[in-house]
Image (cartoon, rainbow, N blue to C red; front, side):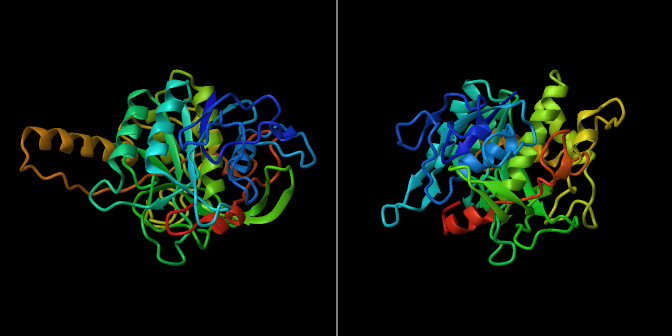
Length: 348
């Protein structure tokens, strides 16, 4: 199973990632093959890759949530000309990165980044919206971090807000919403956002990290596990199962901080033991279908309305914290150390 990691690139030479980083690409003009982390503040993409597919090597011994997956790195961040240490996601680069990863066989896309969402019913740039549609047409699941300003301005952030994207909120180790997690109707499920550690692009281990970057990475790994266990299951059904088997955190369900709740991977992986009705809620794809339909109607009849409401949905399995045998204990963490330092009005 291959996870397309759209981020700052990945340090493929890190022992923790030995043998798992494929030759990727660079859609932000960096002229790399994705196997170099261009983010100078600790290495965001490398950290996400280790959380997903860490092999237990190096000085940290960190094992990822889905260590048998491969990482296809795609660099999509544009450096700030006023501050080269900062970088922000570029919408066209993200759109091109999605298509690049899909065309090279990724079945899951991880986007642990975000910037202010455009207005309108889809809250997504046309470039990224069309690229997400391309991913769905190729049966690829797109996962994104909901954002970390829930304790502040709490504005919608893309690509999590885009139709068809599985938006991930954050929870603490006590199964309560993480303070910073975005409160938005697009949030579908939740994963650990605090209380853990992360590995930098130099192999250094940092403690007390926080952020929905890690929540999304861990959920991306969970999607990979479900797909690997059920190779004939569509991405649409995988998402539906994650929502239906999630552990509710708040009432009513779904709620805007954690969606349908904390994912429970073992339940999502086992459709025999934990069957989910075919008509179970799947607002992630329902919203995509509704907006696609509205777009078709608008093409046929320009006066037709394209406005629609949306509600997210939630996940499944033994809460991400100890998801697979051999995975490092309490992969609950986050990465706000990196996310917060980099996150500016249009940064990650």
